[in-house]
Length: 444
Image (cartoon, rainbow, N blue to C red; front, side, top):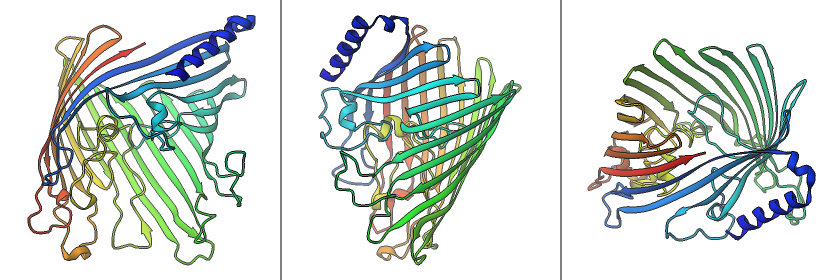
C-alpha cells in the first residue's frame, strides 16, 4: 500500500509543479470485484487429505489514459490488492503472476501491468511499450499476458493490417543480469494479421512466428521455432451470434545444433460457438477441441496449444479465472487435473438462458468433456482409465443492481469422470465435486 500512496503523491507533485500538465486530459476506468467461494473437494481422488475450501477474494483493476492530444496517448493499467481476505501472502520471490507483468506478491499490493504509447499518425497507428498480448480473434485460445511490444495497425475501408514484435523474454547482459556469458538467448515473437470487417461481423487471419532461444546457452542446447496460424470469424446472422476459430501450430519443439534428436511440433485447437436469442430466452451451444500429445509419437509434440486462460466455459471444469487462479489445480490420480485452461480434450456444451427483466440474466448449462489422448498404458503396468473428464451442470444468475454495480451467484456440480483415476490401479476411486460462488462487481 505504501507504493500506491507514493505513486499518488508523486503524481500530485508533478501536477503541482508543472503548469503544462493541466493541459493533459486524464481518462480513468476500472473494475473492482469482491467474491466468495465454497469448493467441496480440493482433489477429486479418494484421498483422506481432501478438504473443502471456502474464502473471500478481491481485485481492483484501474486503467488510466493520459491524453496529450487527440492523436497521442499514454495508456497505463494497474492491479491493486489482488488477494484473499485475511489469507497468507505470497512469498516475496520472483514467482510471476500469469496474467500480470509483475510477481504474484506485487499483485497482492500494487502491480503496474501496462505502460505504453499510443500514436495515431497519418500512416497508421503505433503502440510502443508494455501492453496486452495473447489475445487474437475470438476469446477461445486467448491467454491475456502483458508483454513488451511494438505494434503497427493500418485500416483502409473494411481492411485492417496489424503487425507486431513481442519481446517475450530477454537474457542479455545488463546491470541486472551481470552473470550472463552468452548472446542470443532471448524469446521473440513476430506477428502479422489481416482483418476484414463488415456491419455484422469480422473475419481474420493471424500468423505468429515464435523464435524461443532461452535454452541455447545450455550445454545440451536447442531452440524452439514454430509458426501459429489462426483463422477466425465472428458474425451475426438474424438472431444467431456465431464464433469460430482454428489454431494450427507447426515447427520444431526442439531444434538442436547437431540436428540429432530434433522434436517436431504439430498441434491444433479450435471451437465453434453459437447463441440464438429469442427475447427473453436465448439458447447456445459450443464445441471445442485441443489436441493432446500422442504417447506413440516420441519425436513429435502435439500438445502445445490450450483453450486459453480467458475462456472459462464452466464454473469448475477448465476454469482458470476463478478456480485455478485462486484455489490452484484440482487433481486426480497420476497428475490428472480438472481445472483450466483446457488441454487434451474434446468439449461440448449446451445452454439455455432467460432474461425475465432487463436487469436479470439466468443461465443453465450442461457440459461434457473427454480426453483426446490417454497416456502410455505401459507405465506402471496398468492401462489408463476411461478418457471421460466428466459432465458438469452449472446454474448462474447475474443481476444488475445499478448500471455499474452487479451481483452474480453460481452453483456448479461436476460428475467426475474416470480419467481422473489415472492408471486404473485396483481400488482407485474418484469423487464428484461442486462449487458455490458469488461475486459483487463494480465498473467505472
